[in-house]
Structure formats: structure tokens, C-alpha cells
Length: 54
Image (spheres, rainbow, N blue to C red):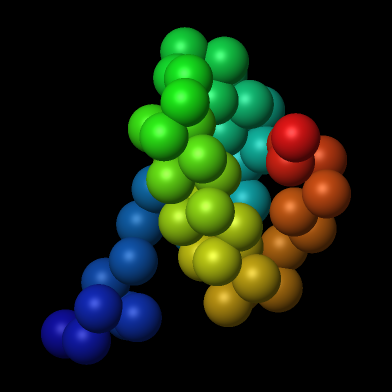
């Protein structure tokens, strides 16, 4: 299975509420990294990313 086909998690599902919850528990570099990776994954799967970005 390719990484693209095996992708799971809230960004893959487009679960913005969970992403917001996760982001609220992070700060600094960890927050930015999680936000950046989630945005990239959601863009790949055509989900709206404007609902949680800072």
C-alpha cells in the first residue's frame, strides 16, 4: 500500500473539530507543524482547510 492510499487520521477524514482540538493542545513549533501537515493532507484530499488555520 502506498503512503497516499494508507493515509488515515483526522486530516484525511476532514475532521476539522478534532484538528481544532489537537491544535488547542499544542503551541509553538508543534502547533505550526501539526497545522502545516494537516493543511497539506487536507489539500490533497480536497477538504476545506480555512476552518481551523490560525
